[in-house]
Length: 110
Length: 110
Image 1 (cartoon, rainbow over the protein chains, first blue to last red):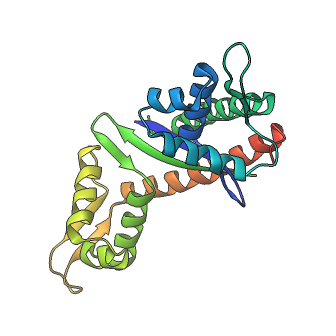
Image 2: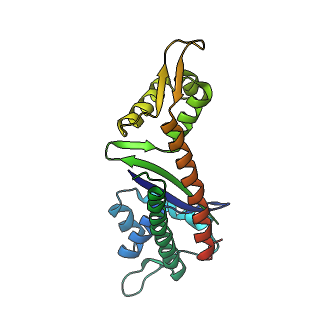
Image 3: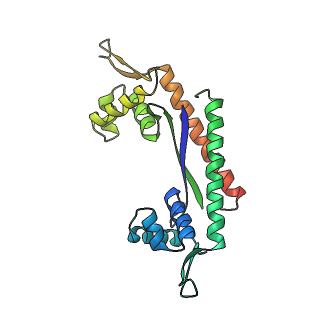
């Protein structure tokens, strides 16, 4: 027996972070572009944009920043706040899996 | 900010328990009938039967038992093993929510 979980963080205005949103933010960080990130994740640009828009509506502090021009021709990057939120999400997720594994053992279900 | 979670328990043969499966098992326990349980949950008898069949395939010990005839005209009941599994699932779920609330506070996200 194995125990699995999905977590998500929400405010009154909607979902801030979930597996899908974190995956998108990480890919934006990796590629520096919402367009490249959506292609890499095989979702439409419109869907990616909508997800980010929903994320932005749940928080006052921006998670991403769009840079225009510059030597690299601009692009989309994560803010330090965005990066720290992803680290927190991943940490809580990992700790939750460990917690659940212990519970399964405690209740003799594995 | 609030943190939410969904848990499920699976074996190599499929999903044993999830929110939906536990809800169905509880309703069978309450109504004494798979037919009544599926109606109460607004799902088709076929879907309810398929869910139970999947549950049964993941474990060697039966979670439900079908009684034929008798003064109450038979029906479907949970076995003691089925009842104990539901209690374990609900307990782990509740403990997980408490654990996650603490994590949110720990990371100053609420």
